[in-house]
Length: 247
Image (cartoon, rainbow, N blue to C red; front, side, top):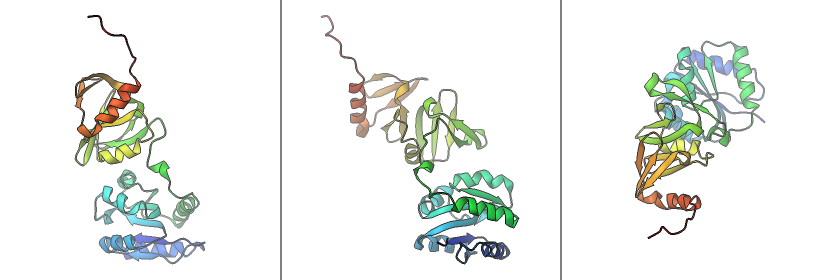
């Protein structure tokens, strides 16, 4: 079996170097190369069976979120390259599998490639959190990577292209959609949606008054019409039946 690899870089010399490196690996087909990112993305959308993509971070002509949505399901492995070490964290934003700092030695390149192609195809592991924590960039702290424990999440609010995650001890604003974070947390049974703009943790519901949920930390959320039935079912399942009140 031979693997198909695509490389996108404005520097033709870099592409030639990658092609020469791949030529030393017998299990790879000839490299498909692009120096124009727009042409590359259009072509990639029409291709099938792409095992590996190498892309210079400066060639991203669309947003990180769009790149992930377009390519992650079509390409087994993505390697982001850059001449700037500070771009390493940006590689995580596009759900890349590895980062290579240019210029890189052939030994580094070959080791990285061999590790990636020997792994099993990308599965749900990248799309949901099953561990007791995950890392996310916090806009409020100069986009530093912040550890979040799902068990400490009180509520998550949609802010258009961002979300605000309120935990027991911090507030994190991240460049992520509510739909995406809901997918990531879908194995966390205590997380539920109660409004088109809000996810909450059932663990931190303090009181329910009419259409308002009062959460720990003085957070009040109005229940959306489309989410009332789910909330009512949860309340019913967890309500202790008592006798009638005395008249």
